Amino acid sequence: MLAATQLPAAGVVAMSTPYDLPEDPRRRYLKLMYRLQPSVAKGPPDWHNPQAALDHVDYPSYPTRSILELDALLAEMRANLHKVKTPVLLAHSRQDNSVHPENMQAIFNALGADQKSMLWIDDSNHVITREPERLRVFQAAENFFQRIENNAV
Image 1 (spheres, rainbow, N blue to C red):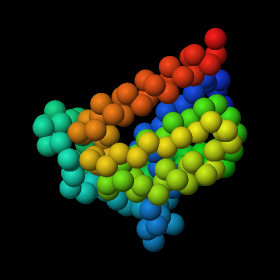
Image 2 (image 1 turned 120 degrees about the vertical axis):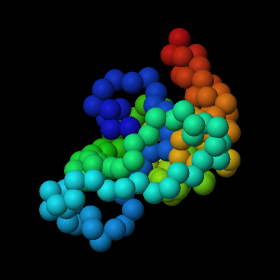
Image 3 (image 1 turned 30 degrees about the vertical axis):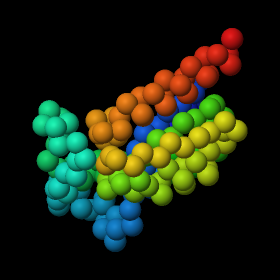
């Protein structure tokens, strides 16, 4: 999403995108924490499609420093979302346990684009491109880009 504030784009599709990190008292200590605790274990997976999980490349923990960097990146994104003027499609699962669903509405509200829409997915968790409704997600993205292409001609 941040790239659309700095680079030319005909349109943007953002899936399962965070607006901010969840409230956590440890966030204010991240600069110290990443030196003392280099990584933080991930929570248990929560797949709606267990078959997709079998070949999903994953990592067992988050580097603590990356959380600090993500926090800064999200702050920059929030400060610049009003500059996104290109059409936007946001897609998010109502059952996403990694990036809570209210993040999509916050991004939507902050966008400067006149043409913006939200696609809610129900039978999925965070990785909506691998979950049961993935074909619906792919079709929505394809339709979105076709509309952009047809309007540009």
